[in-house]
Image (cartoon, rainbow, N blue to C red; front, side, top):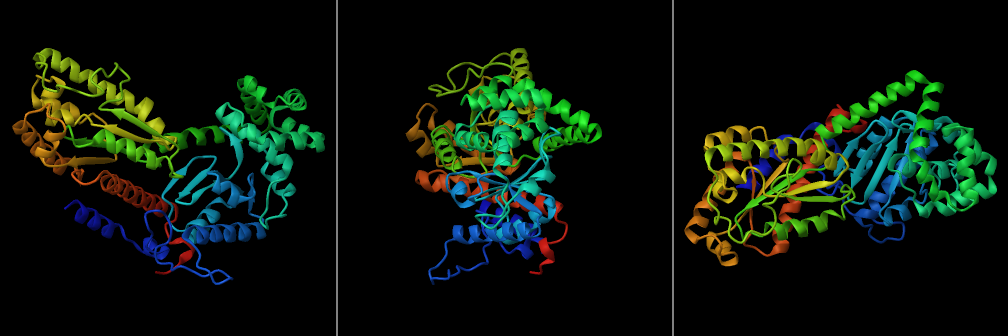
Length: 484
């Protein structure tokens, strides 16, 4: 039933824009393209075709001098080790359009003021309009283009001086950490082009701080720059503000507006797993998390139980040996507890869940507030159910509900803490709830690999449809004006 529902939803979402790109598989590779042969006659893999298309886009944009690869210019090696491709572009929308047209619909997209990130199965491509931190530019785009060279890969690459500053500051200023793997690059630039490095750093943070940073490099202690990160940020921002006050303020406003939008429309989903004790929720979540860690679109996984635990510690998390052993609380105590739970959810979503999602961390919940509506005894709720339903409307809902369904007899055999008759009643309530909230019902009586694979496919389908909708808003017309 759920498969038919998803199929109908996908069919309704098909548009001229959608068809112009060609039907896309869930991993972001155009589905209508057949395997092609290389010049040697061997069949190219999907990844090889994707890589060829990416190189073709970069070569085309470099020929028009509208794009520069900022670092890791050997893009094939960078993507192979799990990195990304950073492209500075003076025509951000045009490059994005060409990428989507040639590489297929990505799994996910994230639009920030300073970077548009596109995530395909085979890697991540970031398109930057400027090189900045919250509106303050720390590498001049014009100078990066002027100093860029097309050797040895064919596409424009930033000069070693610009690469050194960008590699150093992108982690230091943004993340307050130092990447030691860029030591060799920074040391080499300091040794062979000290004046250019000093000038580039002076342009970003001023002469005094440039001298401090260059001296740290000479002492082979560039990592110690982390100790100065707050003062460097302040120097960078105020220097940019004095140089271009209105542009810097506008960039600062754009940054925060984009961050708010990103929290309202996250690039990755939030999922809640429901089901009887013994359905395998914890096992499925852990196995799913291991798979998600290998997705380019996923920068981590946050696993939580039932509620965020921001207002008060979730003492009811972890294995439960006797879920119905304790008596329900009295009415007044139950009402007070449920109000605290709603407050915990509201505050927890704002301060924890939304922030994780905006950082491309998939959030997986083992149970959700709606479990209380199915099994109030488990949570010792003794108040009126109409109140639980009413205040439950204030609880943030995940993007995807998954109900792991299996016969009550199987669940009881795995975890006999609840009587079989009660397990049967709870299963019926869960199925009723699934219909009410639009949950995906997954047969959990199958082998674990099959269950996790179906849940993974549900997530991929959800991300793909949401990404297509967002790209439709970005490109009102099919990319390149292509026809189906």
